[in-house]
Amino acid sequence: MKRKSNALYAIVVAGLSAMLLVAGSASDSTAQEKKVMVSPSDLPAAIAKAIRQAFPNGRILKIEKEVEGEDPGQYDVEIRSGEKEYEVEISPEAEIIETKEVTAAATIPDSEQGKKWTESFGEEDCTFSPTGRNRFFILEPGYQLVLQSPTEKVAITVLNETKRIGNVETRIVEEREQEKGKLKEVSRNFFAICREHGDVFYFGEEVDDYEDGKIVAHGGAWRADERNSRAGIMMPGTILLGARHYQEIAPNAMDRAEIISDDVSMKTPAGKFENCIRIEETTALDPEEKCYKTYAPGVGLIQDEDMLLIKWGTVE
Image 1: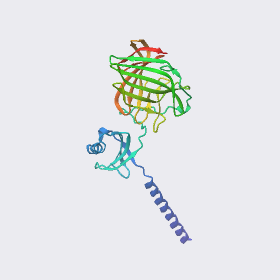
Image 2: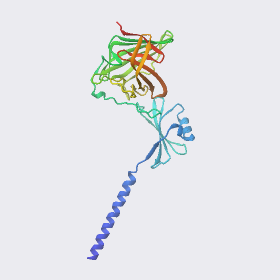
Image 3: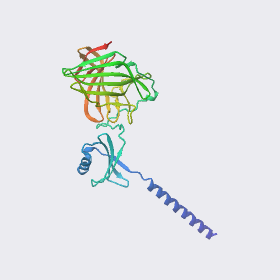
Image 4: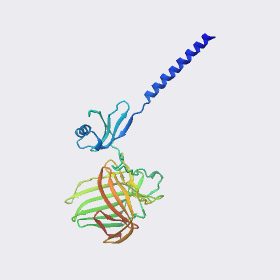
């Protein structure tokens, strides 16, 4: 009887040992890396130098440092150089271990201040129309705004033309910009309004840059139906003070807007306007670049930097 008990004990011990061994192996195999975010300004000088040497014109999108795992002290850096993005692993000794090219998708980084920007707008629930309006944006053929400063002038005209972008029929809005009396840029912007919410979506633009009357470039052109691109919102149907959203989402076009005031009064050559909203525009491609615009209810854009509205209404 005792012998049988000893045998049973041995079996139990062996079983428990096996379970502990398996559990330990599973724990080791599922051990997770632990990383912390690092600001570019906090990079060690040797690491920063290695990045500059490898990518002289690169822009750092994200830095993580591994503090627990197989490679403690290693830096994992995401970099955009030209139209390409790379994932770079750098050792604590500032040696580049691996560089891997990744698809240059429309990655949405946060600004340096840690602000979050809305990038998903529920367009799958929208019924889109190429014609309509909300309180601060008019998308009706023939409607025109003209703004002017001492050196610049822009005419924004809603054309009686549409263009299909993906599955959406969009309205074309033309912007003709002059500088010192000479044509500088003509863009054809593609918009559609969500009937359910009144949001005006931005689906892309065609751009012609002019010099001495000739087209010399097409800077900033993009379409929401191209690879790694999607529509943003030009003007929300519901205005929320402090709201931040992307207007463009493409590898080469990532403009975004923040509603910074909703009770602005402004006098322009075309008249005085009340209850306006002011928007700060930036771009994720260069967060330091900023511009300010003001929109009046029932009218639309009345101020763009130093350009002010000089006339508005329907044209033939």
